[in-house]
Image (cartoon, one colour):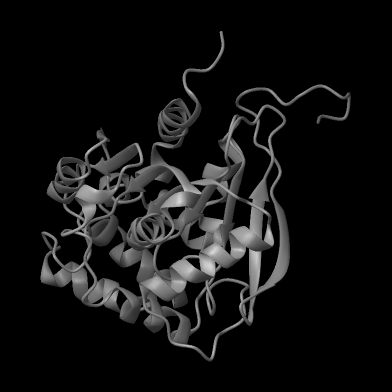
Length: 283
């Protein structure tokens, strides 16, 4: 609520609450929003590789009719490093533990980039928990149309999180879209990035190695929104078309930008997600 007791305006950012919880032996930082006009199940968001909750906060703050939840994976952001090495199924089990700890019986699941693989795995592993699925800038995993080798080499290292100068030099090459010509955008994005631990980063790389959803996507029964940028060097657009074609109840939305369209096209992305999750906004 505002200071005068009125509900926030539709375009007014909502506050984010942070706290730590213990889940399956891990100390995890949770970030949540609870807008006053929220409807239905909350949206559980899985982030990209090495990315902390701060990257998702602009998206979460702008969701006016949907509660949102995300968490830093072990060794990422403010979550403590883990002694365990997990595959993607292990991270999905950790996410289920987060839902249990927060008393969330059902959620919508959303994955961005690397997190799209985790969102698919979570939906397959715990279908009874997921109402709808949102996949952004992601693919079927190991069996995908790959990025160029030069892009993959730059993505294989966490150096972009450790060096702002390095990030600004390569941002256009790996993220495409507005990052190709807007140096100020790269500067703003760099300020939001918290460096992951090396163990946390390489565990995420290992978790996805050899994993693919291509052979079981046809079993996903949940309504699915697939979103992609038309200038995405990391995940070429054809991968989104494959996802949308393989998932029975899927729709595809293409944005005129690159890999990080969830940030650069924020108003349109938020509107599209909320229309998919809860329907058109009341007049």
